[in-house]
Length: 101
Image 1: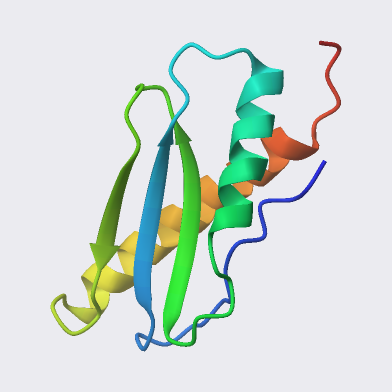
Image 2 (image 1 turned 90 degrees about the vertical axis):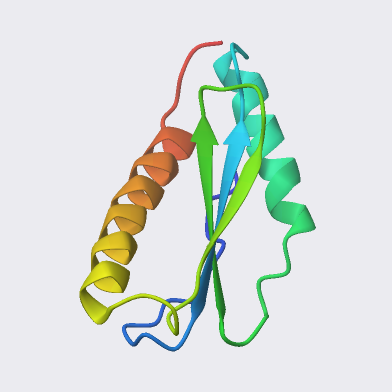
């Protein structure tokens, strides 16, 4: 299974953060993995100054949010990045788990 490596990490506030909440609704786990893998192939990972996060969401709709470091405080940016890193780690763990399907 492909890992959810979808970003270049940066500890500074230079990168715009794009969060992709991918709506997986009531899909079975194997379809969630397939959908996330397909979605990751669509995202360009080599954009300088942009960090992408893919997060599966229980809703059916997919939405995208942007955190622009020029428009938020350093603390808000750091808090958001920490929460997103935690969600990314959970998504990676889910993707790597071996499950009987």
